[in-house]
Image (cartoon, rainbow, N blue to C red):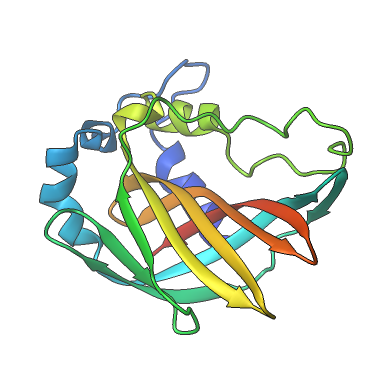
Length: 195
């Protein structure tokens, strides 16, 4: 949770009390793929990742879960086209994170589905990020990362949607999908990456 606090403090300094959007952060100029490619090599190196609270849904069953409390190390390699290769020592394959050319992302509160009352809201919503950064998230660098793994005989697909507020932090949502014993499951949780 310390890294999330550091993320809040480093970005909240931009927000004036009582103001709407913060003064626009330089990260808001990175929402152009060419600019991202130019600066993406600055992302290389050793990072920490923290898996925060979320929930898993299978059929009508919804199970919330807290953050795991672990802060783990990952390494990032930047490719010339701006793709980031995010690798964990225990991963079966690295996450390949590509430029996201999509409309504005929305991750406000919990989904409106039965059984969701106990599910935690995202640690940061898209509105929180936009207030802190001073621009809509589609003006920021955003990456879509994917990888797969087989755990206890179950093949799982991992999809990450990462917002890049600067060269020292990333925030996003991790979605895991798979089928176990004939039942499809989906899990969503917030993640932060920091140096």
